Image: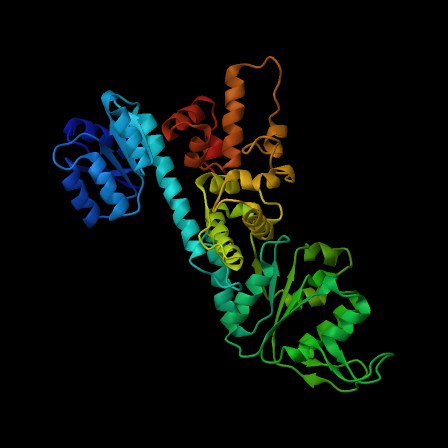
Length: 459
């Protein structure tokens, strides 16, 4: 992070810079508002820390310039005791926060970190709202970048792709992205194996000739033929009955499909993409899925991570869903408040991306305001296994692992609270410190005091 500190008291500005440096914050200094304005025009910063009273262009004038013409960054004002009214006015003008001299440098550091994090989240939401196609994966997390890399490299080859992941993670979206990467001119044809009765599924997949069975009054083309020149997506392939698995295997091997009631096969040219939320290896071991078919479809495997393992993508996804839903409702000015974003980041989303999309849609419909707040998502808390009643932060898995023991010392309680917060935040030190309301330096001291270093080494 890069911070601009504007203060005519050189020793004050330099002491803040020296304090920020070990915490990973680079700082530039300016002695007045005009110099600060020039540096903001010439360089990129994540936040501005400015004194209120300065000769020439003061902090209030600098704040107004930032809000009207300058970069979109948070501004934290520093005021003397007699400037409280001015500090409150600065908040009305758009300042993120203010501190009164003399102040605790730890408190300033915490405010700067929160301000920068809020800015990052808002930019992510704005990027998501900028517009995404329905068949485009949304996400910049390392896991999703790897998924995109594999799909981009494997799809043009024509090899069969198996997409795995929990329900609601976006397997069909990944399949559509794979089809786009394949550059095939034919259609993308999806079918959910669990959505059809066994007899109907066979005729849907392979088609039939007139008179093949009672009610077959005319010839029907199956989905394999409908996907000629394109991609056939077999969703929830583990639901396919064993006798149809044999027929599917033959189609893959021979590249021909035989309609029901026909004695000859029709050549096919298509890409096959399959998906499942089950453990196919276990299905093979227990005799519910053919081993030879498993190896035929498992040429290129893509694992879609659950949303709880890609929480950095939540603002992007929420922004994309909000833009789509509010657009259809004619409420294009809708936005997500900071408290709503943080609520969504705390929630585990057992239903993954699908649950997030449904939550955004419901909140848009029921909210009377154009800004969605945390209270608009309270319904998630009541139906979640990941959150305790009246607690947006605690997760039952952690609480049950570290229950309260009557009579235990405050030190033991504090140790458990820190360990629980570390686990909730995947041992990310800055997020843990922010949740606990302490600085990163204080957290590191506590980790050392309670001998929690081994857990953090795996960060």
